Image (cartoon, rainbow, N blue to C red):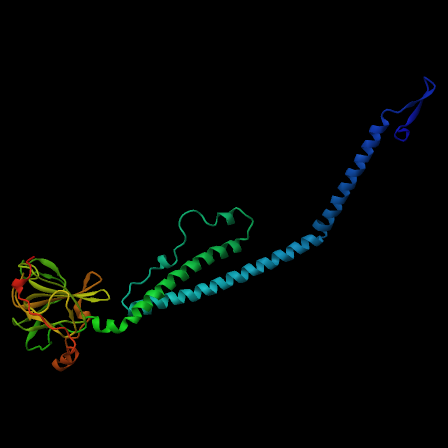
Length: 336
């Protein structure tokens, strides 16, 4: 213990006494030396890294790793952009060609590019030190995956309808409902707004009116199934509605004679009835409508009234396997 004590001579007592402040002074000098050494160390580190721009080995390694990760994120972003461009081209081809040809509705851009609703699924990226490029890559990857899923489902639908394309060709109502012999009929009213011939006021006409003699044959304009046969004393009179599939229906109204029954399958060019003057009518004529996906469309977009009688006869040939015709008089149907 004597090694940690210092003795001083007291001239008054003429004896050596322990220096009580020595231990404190010694401790202070040790602490001061350590503090000065630490300060010098930090100063030297600042000189090396801040002034002389000398990196520590660990810092250099971390920077290399960070640079490599940033490079990978950039490559990932470039790849995502390329795949997005290719997918966009496929979407345009799908809407402009495949779905248009098959009569399918276009998929709206906002549907294809819709994000994810609900809670913020990227909150974990906002609350971290992730690079902005990495966050963008994660978000774009999610959007790309969803767009690819929607496109895949669209192709499934296109493929299903494409397999039925052969049937579609015979189902679309593309021939006139009567033989276009100009000596035996004339087009008395077209599709669109007109003055109603019965009530003499503006009204929208949902089809075409073919004026012809009572009894003039009426033909199915495409393959299909008879969906409705009925009689209305005022509206359409005796009428037939045929469901062709693929969103198409046709209506034949004001008939004098009905030659089919509900549920019968008919072929394009098959005689289904005769021109008449039943219902709300001012003269013998056939009222003909083409209904696509529940909305009346202009029948002139589907037919060629300039074809010859011979051409019409060729297109309207009835298959030998056509169903046996059933004669149904108007009085046999329920009145509406």
